[in-house]
Image (tube, rainbow, N blue to C red):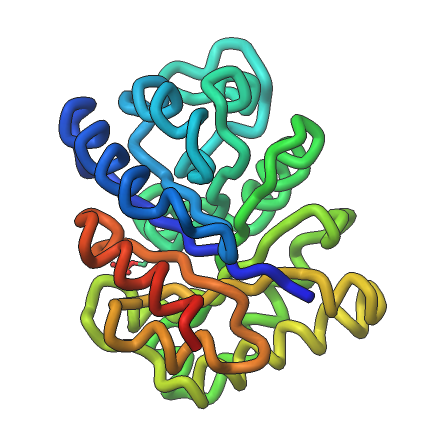
Length: 249
Ligand code: PGA
């Protein structure tokens, strides 16, 4: 039985003080919630202060990115060892904003994913298509390519996130049917490549304008196992609305 994971990606938002306010609010509101995994992904600068709060709670911590080497002359980059050191359990890899603004390619994403696993982090690897690719009927091809590029990776140690680019930060959510079709396609691909045990255990999150009022219908789909939430994770009430919505199906 797959346990839902509701992950809040704060992106480039929240000073240390604001991050602590948000996570304190979440900690209070979620203290009796045990039926779902909850994780927050603050900016790097706030991770340690947030960790001091989350370590006493049922909220896990994650980083938004990592580098593919552990140390050395990589000015401005963050080693997976630092991420572990600061108390993180998860790390997001291959988010579409990294692919778009930082030209991250599948080969780099593959290396980052491998190193994250080696360092005992759980990578949340994002895949998804652009609007143009969807309109050209290329959604399956794009997803398949991205999954295939994750070569030599133990799929029992990762979480996948299906994030259609046209739904991120746009307020346009995929309909439950559209999302489920992609999720099922991904699970079938994993099954073909890695067998039914891995496929039935892997969590596939949906990401793209998840809100308290659409979370239920999305989570009701058989192959959607949680959400990677951007904008709506920046506020206690809306993120709690999503967490609560995901368990009261
Ligand atoms: P959004 O972002 O919820 O603001 O659409 C989702 C994401 O980027 O993971």
